[in-house]
Image 1 (tube, chains in turn red, orange):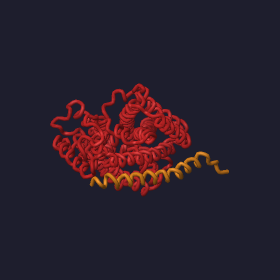
Image 2 (image 1 turned 90 degrees about the vertical axis):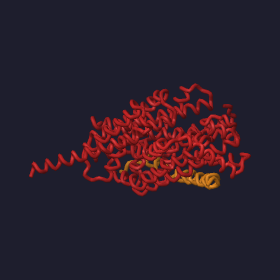
Image 3 (image 1 turned 180 degrees about the vertical axis):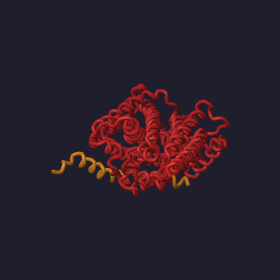
Length: 467
Length: 41
């Protein structure tokens, strides 16, 4: 891809400013500050940070590709995701914010189900966050590689390395501050891109609407009921309260700030996804029909944006990747230190903080390595979704509502849900097309029920023996 | 619907971007003040 001198300058300035921004907010003194920012994040920044993390490469570059191929079909299906964020904001995030003595999801799980549940949550959280960071890193590296022509490996190291550098020393508030900046950049740049594309396309608005309808109908005909159900379910629960989102709820200043931030982020998804899907439809009037779906976003930007603004858009695309990566790297370090190391050993405050910073860098390096084996963005995300929801989501949600939880319920739910989902997906290859996430969630519910009943019976027997 | 997606949503998104930029200043200032805050005597 040929870049003008002005575009290169804009991209370099963006990276320099980002590093300066990371430098401004770099210092943290306690682990609590690193993990949940002293529970002091206002609603607007919870919103910006959540929205920036949600709008990763899948919900931007990937979603424009879907708009190009299937019109608004995926927009309608993925609205389930926006609903999930709003519902989490109304019913779950405020309850998480109430846990002022918790710095991680594992802490919340320990309060409800004991130390083994915390350890299991920590292991799943770290694995999942490294997986997310690898998938995001691969996309970011590929984009930088396409823009600059540098080797893919070096591009991957640059994107993930800069992300780790702006994240590792400042903790969650530095992450949220840079995400706020990245959110502003991408929401303004992509909106301008869409408006200019609509102005420059030879098609009228009514013919664009007609094309969107046709593409949506064609896309719908190519899918069966199980596929549609699987996608909706995956987006509905797959990413619900994953560690970065839960950490935003835990870090919020008040329960109201947490609720408002989550609900606003969910509503913003409705706006954002419509824009990037429409961009894919509008692109039909501007790009050759044989353009690859994944290239539509950047190619249309190159076609309609003036020099300099195109560089800004490319910076925004890299920001999209980095914002998601920052959150998951910070969360992986918090989960590792708090829920894995903290379970077996209680280091001093200073050592804990140092360990959190070092583990951010180590996990970034692991993500770079794992990125070489990561599948495509949507496939990678769907695999990760099918692990998270069946393991942690159900016991976490029930734990926030049920007072008398039993340790066996949490542990059995995690093991049964995670185990069955992995077996169904990896070894049985989803027989009859039934999605692994559905099997995993059912097993998780069954495990929870059995554990809770066994725990209650045991407690009753103990009480009987005492009396 | 396409009309809303094409013209109303971009305006909302730009508005959100500007609102966040506006809130970012005080947020970073608070972090900076805490970093360089002297311990009370």
